[in-house]
Amino acid sequence: MLEDAYRMWNANCNQLFVYDDFLGQSTLEDKLYKNEDSRLISLMKRISADPTKRFICTTRSYILAQGKTRYERLDRENFEPVTCVVNLDDYDRETRARILYNHTFWSRWPASQKASLADPDNYRRIIDHPNFNPRVISDVLATSFNPSWGDVTTQLVASLDDPMRVWRHIFENQLTDADRVLLATLFSLGGGSFFVHLQEVLLAQEDWDTSRMRRSLHVLDGTFVKIYYEQSHQYIELSNPSINDFLIREMADDNSILRRVLLNARSFEQVANIWVYHPSSNICDHGDLYIDLHPLSHEIEDAALATLEVPTASTRGLVGRLVIALRVSAGLGLSRLNDRVADLISVQGRIYFGQYDDIAEMIRETAGSRNPQIRKHHKAILIEGLTALFNRDRSEKGVFTAGIYAHKLAEFVDEKVLDNIDAQAGEQFGHLMELYEFGSPDELDPDVFAEALRYISIFPDFYTNWPMAEAAMEDFRVEVNDADGEEDYEDDDPEWSDGIIYEIMTALMDIADQD
Image (tube, rainbow, N blue to C red; front, side, top):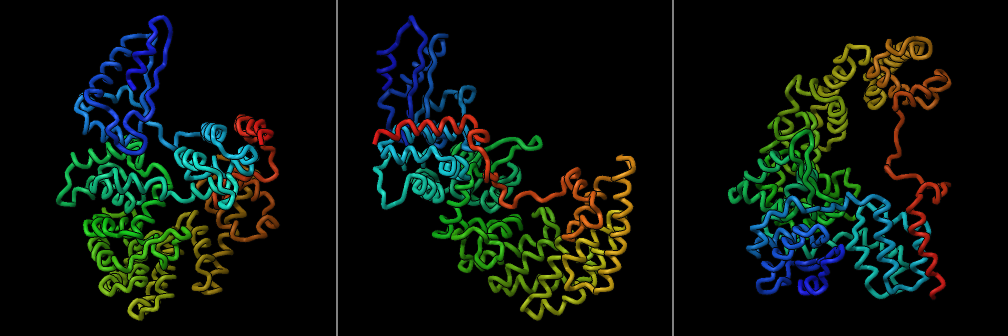
């Protein structure tokens, strides 16, 4: 209450006033009583004029945005210079550990459960979780302990794995239809987009304009999305992986918003990004996170046909778009899209100028197609594709590129051709290794040498012929990083590797004797 601030005011000392959740905890409540918005502004102005006083008001970004629409005095004030948005991505491991420690310490869970979070194997699973969210931590530890649901680590991880409980209430009750459409559109763009591209897609809908888009972004910023500058241009992306997971589940249950996005699709990327989550996409590796697109097959087909041949509507080249269109048409049984793709791939010379990876995928896709209309073009595509992969780049680097793709597509390449490419590449690599070991570094083209190292890494025994190649790979950073991108904590010393985090969490051991 504001009365508390006035009652505790002491002109003779430094004071910090904190008004936590001043507009409500999880929804815009009528928390500011009659004329309290005016009194709040008055208190802010009084404190700003006194160097011995500070005032912090906390709320969630979307609630503040809604509050400014409800309370006229709040809307008239410019809070931007004194607004600090704390994004979940801003929390480093130490901050996450302090949040976990604080909620754990003050919870009413058994001391033995609290102390178990001092174990690095336990606290790391939480503070390193991609969906880490203080609200989830707080909600779980505010409940009574139920051993049938598992120990504290099990319950916290299970809650972080399920973003629905965090976002559903806000999504369904606090956001407008426009806000939800913007989120679904951003999801269809891969979860991130430059402002101008998102604007182009949204404004294709008749009931959208720039001011409506900016209002929605203002509400979503800091909670569902984050906005920053990339290459001097405004970029918008989903603020947390858990939001992407939530949107998948939400649209799997109710595809009406996704249907609306597809009806107004302006980019083939939208089709490609949505297709990723269909069970038969062969790249849907998200466990139970998938969207059955069969009910939307008509909208998918129309969107794909409308954007397939528009070069500015995708970051992919035409051959790459055709590969995806083949997979979509086969997976959903889209005859019109299949016919259009068949016409496009029949044009001589179209495959030759595609990106190398796309050419390789097109060769595989046409070879394995169950549709005779597509499969009949395989032989011509194979000849044209291999010609491009082996001969288009006649530079020094090209022989290694040819070798890489010859082995990737070995089942389609004549054995004598493969042996000939290997012989040329091997001889050229031997020359480059001589330069690496005995010549001047300036004599080596880094792009050529890196491609050469990628080529010889195909062979598991490469180091027997070229002992120095492994050292060269380290110098040129050609080695492959861990696929999961996670830190390897095996056999480490947590006190050394985690430092202050280890100290924070092991302090929970001090309360173990409270049982």
